[in-house]
Length: 195
Image (cartoon, rainbow, N blue to C red; front, side, top):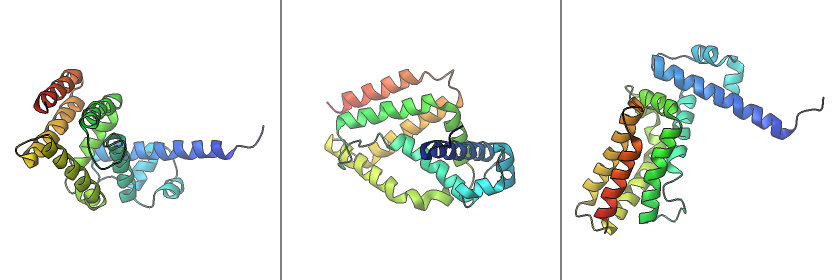
């Protein structure tokens, strides 16, 4: 049997890290972030504390990595060419990809939402994402302004609430919320609005 390659070791490390993250997310969602412990997470993941600490220095670091994963899965589709200006095509692409990502991993988003809705959890990570959130909000504000929305700030709030609302309804009960119909309605609404 030949020794493992660096690529094989990296695959093992990635799989272990993902196992720990998934166990932590399940624990946070089921028992609450503050009631969860490293002991419970390692037991759920079937790994030692030493292995967990090899990847994450604390429970807070685990939470931050989960948030980063969720953030990256969605926001990678926002302004994909990274030029700082949102076009109509990029806006519609973002809506489609947002719902696609959620639909492809409902269980993750359900657990993620349950975790994020817990008291004081968002405060742990909010300073890490303030700058990015402002950047995205400013780009959307400019986009709505460019598309002749009378009140771009209100449009930004409505759009954000609309996307989050549909997402939460869908992950709450995927069988009763026809995501494709909601997506189509939102796309049609904005296509008409931006004519």
